[in-house]
Length: 323
Image 1 (cartoon, rainbow, N blue to C red):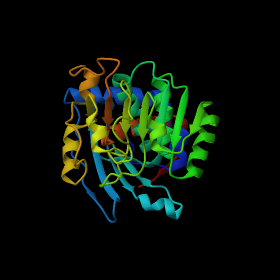
Image 2 (cartoon, one colour):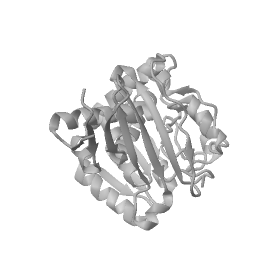
Image 3 (tube, helix red, strand yellow):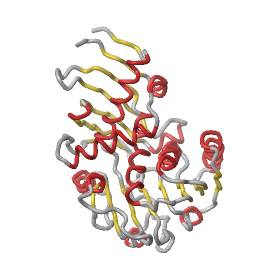
Image 4 (cartoon, helix red, strand yellow):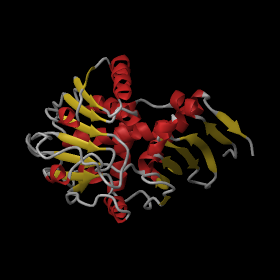
């Protein structure tokens, strides 16, 4: 055992970062452990210094992955006007045998990648296997990571992208062409992004009062939607059309409801661990409308952060801090 602490700045995390397929696999292992009751994750407490802003503490323990720690993360939608990222924060990993901290790392890359990976894990159970058209509403970091993850599990060939910022949409198209070589059509309205899409991802700011831009009838029969921004984009009537409404953790979902979110959503059919373990069926027909509203779990962060730590140590990435 070493009492040294490894510090990984954002560039270090990105340099040591695993492939998206590896993150998806780690999350599936974690969710199987969760289904068996072999993990620990209390509801995330937080403070809210400004409207629609948060700073959350997110601890979790996954014995099978020897991963224990906490993410201290903030989300400030107003940062965009300041030229700053919406999401920022740190992850602390502890040695589960001694409790000693073993690493401190920037959380930005991990948050983006594990969020996309959770969408992919849900899509494997809830989307039609031949889904080719994706509608992405919100062309920031989460829009990119969700597209990357979806392409790892579905044959996505075309993207319809919407963002209230024309510049953000243009950058998204250029980045998607450079990174994935995929056809991206910038559309002028949320309706154009949703109609005709096999998979829809809404990835705007999380709002306590949804702007409800997506209306009933837009999400077609057989489509799958991932609500990365809670229900911010969705009208009550559009959500009511879902045949299956799922989340990544039922207890966390109910806790978030007590904070004033999800005032008018369908009942939760299943949580992601149940779909992966097979105790609840996923998609059962080609015409089902399915929705996953993944909140973002500390378990997902710890599963991903452990991969980053192992690769950083193996590759000599980061800075060791002496006691």
